[in-house]
Image 1 (cartoon, one colour):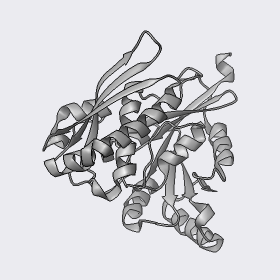
Image 2 (tube, rainbow, N blue to C red):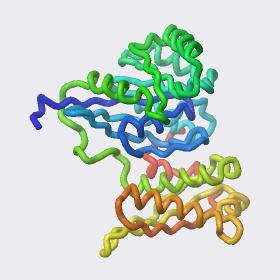
Image 3 (cartoon, rainbow, N blue to C red):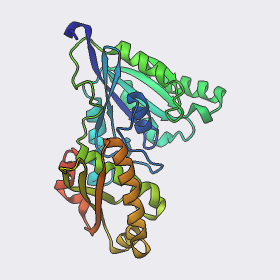
Length: 300
């Protein structure tokens, strides 16, 4: 493939928490690269997804949702989100057209109004929105940040995603690809495995388990028989949370492990042996090691 024929660029995907950014990145890539959950602030680190369109590689920076930060972890996440927009060839602002989250959207629009990058507004969840309201919303947001283009999509059903992907492909500059053809993410398999387990924690425990939980990768070993052995630690802040994760007779952690193992087996294309244990660590969010694992900066 001659270098002059290839195109490659970076697109920053930003928005308020739970706008559907990760679901959109997965839809653009064509397979799962980012975890999703009904819980806000699921994405913690800036994760790159790689989408291909003919001779064009579109590198998508799926950023954490931008919100008013309170704790050190929050500040690191917001910092990573804006870092993902630095030097991007385009910025996508993804907006949940049903739950607008205006208080989190307004500061974003103010900042974007002064950005020089090409800006695209993506109104998500159009499959469950009224058309007239969508058009008014698009006009209102466009007046505040002067977007180059507006797209109406449903990341969940795929409506409008091919059109958005085609337009992004046209916007990418000439240049060599940054990643091999078969690579869909910059996340290591070890980190992706931890993220899959964390997704199951959120999905199965919902409101029972606070946002203050993490999954720490411990071991990731390829076995001679073609299977992989993965060991992970689920970290919570209090003993009461440990009891919730374990469940009666260990039933809850077994269900979380089984669901994560099945998904990982499909994703990796090999048999997975997944071992989970729970650790109570009161101030884990103040532990510098977690930031290194997640690829976040230590923000004071």
